[in-house]
Amino acid sequence: MLNSLTYLTRGCPRNCEYCNLRDAKNVGQRLTIDEWKTAFQILKDVGINFNLILGNETWLLGGSLLDLMRSNQVPYALYTTCPEPLFSTYRDEFFGSGIIDNLSCGVDYAPLPDMFQPTDDSYKKSIDALKGLAWLRDHYPDMDAQGTITVHKGNLEQLPNLVNLLTYMRVFIGINFIHWNKDGQYDFFPSYDEIEHLLFKKEDSMEVTKMMFQLREIEGNLIQNPEFIIQRPSILTQMGWHCKGNPYGGPTIDADGQLRCCGYRRGTHTPVMSIFDLPGNWDIWKDLVYKDAMECPGCAWSYPWMYHYWEATDPRMGEKVFVKHAGRHISKDKWSKRKIE
Image (cartoon, rainbow, N blue to C red):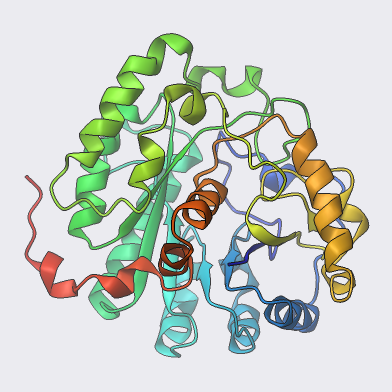
């Protein structure tokens, strides 16, 4: 089972407080669509089973994204924050074509009254994403939908409402935890000092643990990674997990075609190769990414954690989780009449 991760662009209209990716340095000119077509073919040829397409904001590619996806033969999840007016401009063409068959979004908050709304862009992103997911359910109810929640001190108490809402909408839920730039090599997120007010301390461990068990007790919840959220608080909140040399089996591709250690780190060894160097050099790439991963102090990213969990526990379940998106295994009728308690 080999998963890959792709950043199609570093552009993003959002300015979420806990994300530093769009400001990452040392990224060259973005690949052209024709170059991405070649890159996706390489992924297929080397045996990739699932490609997580992140962005930063994939919808910025407009109609050229659809052109690219026509050539994509690898099962995928496509991430977008549903920015307007871009999302409304392309949504009918994208989903009506049948080529793009899923919508994956970051959703950190349920709707809040005006007086309680955070000013950070992650709240506006969440509301736009919820509107996009609701539109998908209304117009293409059989398509896959997933929302990833990044848990931090600012939204911990909101989680039950959000999990209930997404479950009611028949949207599968990934739970992740906030990270910080521990050693100066994580280009995905800011330094500890910049986001200290969002980070969990040791004294928060009991509260976090109670909340995670409360989420699991929500009737009919559609949390995709329940095994992850009952890990020790030190793993969830302190970046206390390590992939031991291979984040998720296959390569991570940056917007300029360079290979990365993983979605969170470029690394110092791996970027000497690009995706176009991969054919015929698989063992060299594995050695480079291993060196970078072993120099990493660790993380708690649920995506590579799930890959390692299922590879060790039940590789066939790994196929069910990553290749066959979870939405295809739940009857829409089962949830169509569900009400939020």
